[in-house]
Length: 105
Length: 180
Image: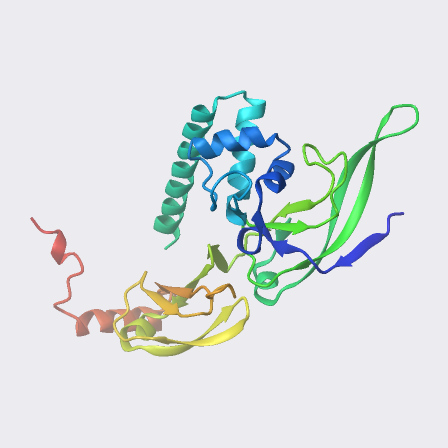
């Protein structure tokens, strides 16, 4: 018999309430910081701040960062390759949203 | 984690089950079920993620030990549809309500509201209820999308009523724009 843990009252919405440092984001994505740095170089991720130690990533990019790092790590894409795939995924999402609006009003 | 639209409007609690693979002493793979009761923050949108600090653990796939992340999805609802922080409701109206205007009661995820249907509203017209969408900052809007529904011409009286209507509008041609 499993007991229910909690209640936990501190679930926060990542996209609106959190910021990540480079180190924190690398933990979330399970990758080396160098990999994230290459994604920043490629323009896939756009943190605020000057330089890796000062970078602050908006919580809203977490899903994007996770997708990008999976592409780099699991599919062994290069950073430019991952950037291209992310752009295409963005375009697909944008078109899907447009389609939903057009069909459903 | 699937939640209902109404839970995002009011905030709430939900118990989730996580299935975690664990190895026993013989090295066999077993599954341990872990149940957590978590809060649903008000105004959370479909596709957003919740973080529960310190509730992660080894064995959560690629996640390093530490935090638990949950992706929120809205369960499909037969009346309401969310698009970001805006919510859409299909609002059926009678032909006379659309033609003459009317004040109608409409359900929303947060209870009923009165909607003023302007006279001369065609099907598909969207009525915007500002701030009645998801309680984000700023709040989203609720859109009532009008759908004119024809009463069925099922009996003699109904058919007579429709024919009378047709005579009253002798010159009306809905296909006028299609000529040429």
